[in-house]
Image (tube, rainbow, N blue to C red):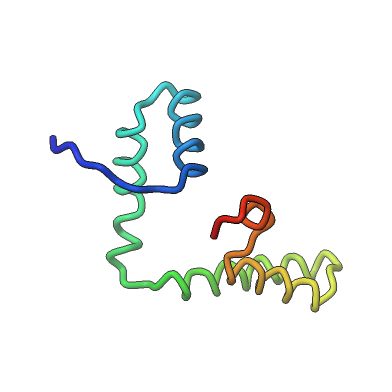
Length: 94
């Protein structure tokens, strides 16, 4: 096995660390599993934008069906697409 260094946002690292502790797995094991699970989708050539649009079209449909106004749904999708979530706005990170 090869050892390497990666750079990830502190918030993501803390989530991975908590998950590793909770599941009694190593951080390395979790990252290897994540890669194995993501690899087929990454190799399929489907872009992040296509996946985003498909998923948020489904979510938007459910929100509209539950009575949320069309404009609010559009604003939520635009906010997520721009990467300006409330968490990121509070921390000042993008």
